[in-house]
Length: 183
Image 1 (cartoon, rainbow, N blue to C red):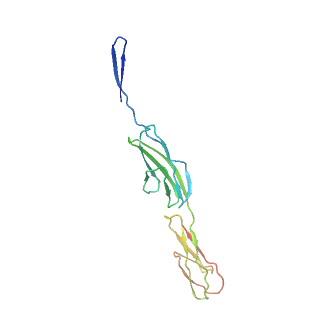
Image 2: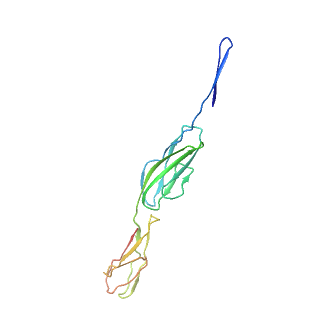
């Protein structure tokens, strides 16, 4: 900006001087919000804010959730779901139309959730006959890997790796069958 000061005395004399004022852009001051702890698979709600001395500036927003997912832009209040437990550094970056950047981070701690297992329906079979089991499970940690172990309750030892094992009971009785899924 150029500013000119002109002074006129009462005899009609005029004096003036010009000076230049340079106004520097200031980066936005950003707040990414408080640290948070959630279960894996639970939606995290973010609520960021910022202030900028350049009251006429326009702004672009970007959230990096720290888990390798594509950053999300366009708003201060996005949601995100983590597929795996762990500790993630979340960064909110605000860029003004003059190219100045402000950012802030917060930590999101994602706690592991145990798989939910369904061992299947109760069975009645004759001794010496093949029993066919069918189980299922779900896990909020969509990136988790799993191991499966069956205990048929008859002291025969366990087997692993399948949700649909077969087993033959050598003697009649009532047996408690347990399937364990570990993430």
